[in-house]
Image (cartoon, rainbow, N blue to C red):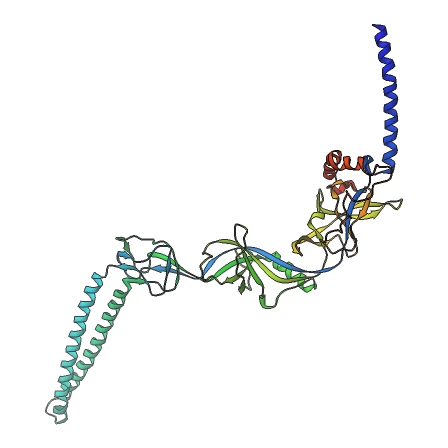
Length: 444
């Protein structure tokens, strides 16, 4: 038993010496490289310059007909027929419903007879006046008798007009038994079926929408409008004159409607219920591709941002205190390091096919922002500069620069074998770990 323990101790002694040598070597390498013994992270940088960028504003809207009509019964009666296809196109003047006309036809016939009787009485009164007038001039009859004849004739004339008015009213109601479309457009379903009792000026029969052009009302919050006004006053933003925006409609599936529109209404008051300003876009829709009631996104283009500072979307990171980017800096030895810079972002824009964030504060012209190679960065960590400083925001780095593969290896690090290993297996593992840590600007 004792000889075996002695042999184990003799075997462990060389292994301990090897471990000490490896630890010393690792410490020496960490002094020359970056964090945890890694070489300085190769990064691509970008020098920020003020730019003139287009500004696009999007709002949620819902399509509506440029004319919306409630078709209601104008006489009381039984609904006899429906003469249109529900949900289809109808033309102005086209018959939609028929309400039973028979009761009104009977009233019209009775009133026509009343008109005829009144006219006969008027003729009789006129003849009586014609007979008595020359006799009254010869004093053959009393003046009162002649005056009464004239008055009776005038009363008969008034009775004729009253009878004709009642007949016209019934004939008008008789015409309302045939319900016609007041506009050309799309129809809704019929709310009443044949045989139903409908009431004058109350029963809703169907709805009609004129969809060419179609309207898209949308609301702009008071805060958004105040922000736009402040930006215009500060010279940071230029809006199109008289709301002459190019209006683009985006559908719910993400596609863009092929025809553009214009703004045809902008309210000057704040809605007290919603606290928003109402605006309305108008879109040509001759083929009826847009239907009333669709939810869409309204994109307003035509505004311009002046002297804007923008960074590529990939350069922006999230931290406990909000958004930040890495900028280049120097340590006490004059070496390049990554420095965390908190920023305040504005709108998201697209320019030259690149997604950009407008920076409201935290960056200025001339700052050098790291836009690639961020995964292995640590706040205050050493970096190896690459890319093309001064390139436009979002511009790609020249070939052969700005990537970890093509950057020169750090001193004391094998140029090919170990670099390939770190960039594949171990590099991916440590890079993911360090990348998660790099989102916290509080560690800088």
